[in-house]
Amino acid sequence: GMLRSASMRWRDDTRLASLLELLDTKPEFVERWSRHDVTDKTVSSKALHHPDHGRLTLRYEVMNLADDGQQLITWLPGDETTARVIDRDRHGAPVSPARLRVVGKA
Image 1 (cartoon, rainbow, N blue to C red):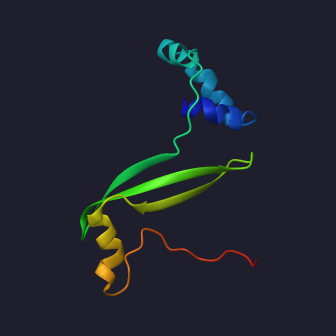
Image 2: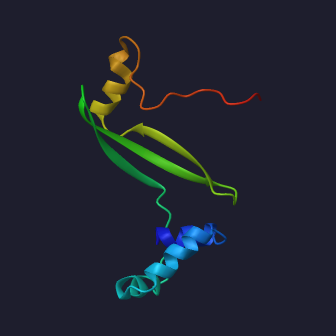
């Protein structure tokens, strides 16, 4: 379903078209493709192994912007343990899964 969604979004991409042509020779793909399922994964979670803190769970939400393929993705702690690690129990500098910076001027 996600591949079908991508094929509609990037219908002019020649590399994607080549991949779909190759896959179209595989009976299992043809069967699934013929169902016309279309999905965008917009909410889910990822489990990560941090070398110092062990297993961390991050929840993410995806919002598709306009029709040009841009997305806004937010990451939030998925459980209390992860929230404590990111927040560091409010002691010291937080451990961030990403470094944010301003790009351009408003």
